[in-house]
Length: 186
Length: 391
Image 1 (tube, one colour):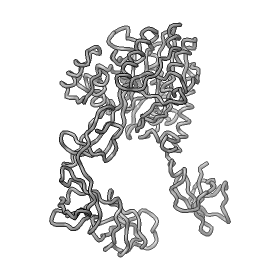
Image 2: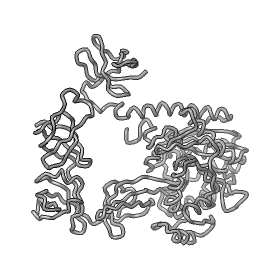
Image 3: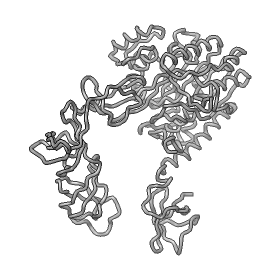
Image 4: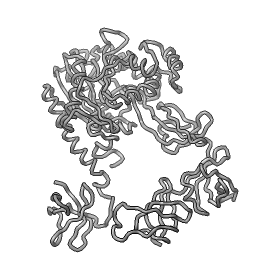
């Protein structure tokens, strides 16, 4: 069992039979009363967010979830197909359950979250490195400001990039935000 | 003087990192640390060049980059706020005192944990020693000091924080109500030029008379719970069930009360667009307050809230040594029951009360929170020079 001092972002807990992940929490201590942690939980199955105040001393039940490292193989209709890197077992995951699934490149290693043997969430590596396939040439001159242009990368995602980025460049992208980070020198 | 740091030199142009961002500086010849340089652009100010220790550019690993220019500005404003606070107390004939931060017997409040220091404890509040000064004959005293509470970290909490406590002997809690309102308005006026504070981008006027509400009124209006203050825990539990308020495994009266308070009342207070004095606390939450002469189910205690931030807690002070000892024993019993650390009773405080404490009122106000409000800061770290995890 977890207590309030274990609360952190990403902690997986079971409430009313459903797995939740903690997305936000705040320490509160009213008047001369007990400490509470005002906590926002996201339902891993539905995405719905609920807020509960957990009093110091209350317990939270760990959710029976498992994180497995799996390789992205290919897209099949609305599904993404992943393969366990050790057992070679394959699973299908609905693409709309995955944040920034358009950054998935073949053979990319991801963390797939299972709840009761069912895949419920996929976390991409924090950064992916993708090649720019399409982009207008930037205007010569101002390359220092925050001016951006759209660029299409090899997975088909469109990313706002600085003007100096050219076709064939490899760029680093933050998968949590889907934003450009930097150009990578090969 | 605005300061910058040379981070790169190309030809006759130096790139200087300043509190307002990176600027290019034209210079004839070399730039030395300490030089005043003219920035590019019409009407640009002179900058003083600081020594640069790392020539790499860009380098986010500097004290300026880590703390941020907003925070440095906040520290300057904090200094002005503390100046205004001390001027306020001087104008009301208070004497500033300094009592020890390390004591033998820290506060016994059930939900506070003191930090040990070589067999003694760091204070969670200076109240016991300040009351001894009242017993000795001082009449209006205030103190601005660090207090320490273990395991309290958050947007409005730092384990080491700054408290302002003040006491009025031969005076009532009504005078303290007036002090709190006038002090907050005065500090805001000094720093911001108007009696306005900001919370989450909302402007709140602290210059007028603050809204007053009793705890019973607030619980009835916002939580849908009618409290008597002397009902049993079981009875209070039933009321929470009726109001649809979750209380987990809570069984103690105060825990049940605060489940409703945190769930319903605090969010409602936070939504108010005016400051609030929450008065007349139930006897179950008496702490060190005396019973109200008008109503024996409540005590003389108020909490001041601005924009949902709990800013101050005040008491008409308990002066009866027998009742004080009984409450300490109750606190210790509750601490034992909950497996919390046990501290000695401050016998010197009991002795002072036995000797005789004049009727008094006092209050503790969170200075960091006051400065947060005045500056519109969202997190306590924004008004501190360094937090414990930045050491």
